[in-house]
Length: 175
Ligand code: S3P
Image (cartoon, rainbow, N blue to C red; front, side):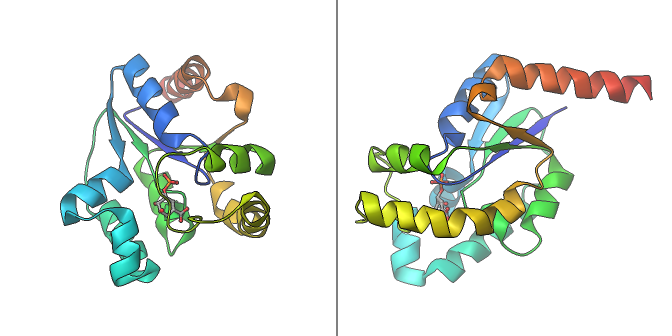
């Protein structure tokens, strides 16, 4: 089991949890937004403001298509990445996908307190943010729920994920 892919709404904790998980498994951690920023030498917010969201979505698709064969990595995707084109199916082919599910109030709380700038929610107050997530999350969950594993808040710990991965490799080796 060598590619672990974390998906979920902005602010659900993909990067923080991904780093912890990678450390525990002794895998490399990769954050798709960081890779895109480094490759194009532009912050995500500047890609959005200079070229528009549609362009960013193309860069995300390109990132997946160019991922190639990776070994022993934990990949944190951007919150919208699985929700466009064939991306979710591709992610499921590339690795074991985990949806980090969080409730709307939790996401609002985490995003209000977040340091990382996110163009889609920038400048929104608590009420606007709640409305935005209430509208968007059900549309995005159509894709997120195609993940191989869905982790609720209490299951979002490295030991639980390791147990799931062990179960999967036990099943594969007994086939
Ligand atoms: C986005 C989520 C962000 C980033 C971009 C768009 C989205 O990543 O890719 O701002 O559409 O949900 P995080 O989920 O890491 O915040």
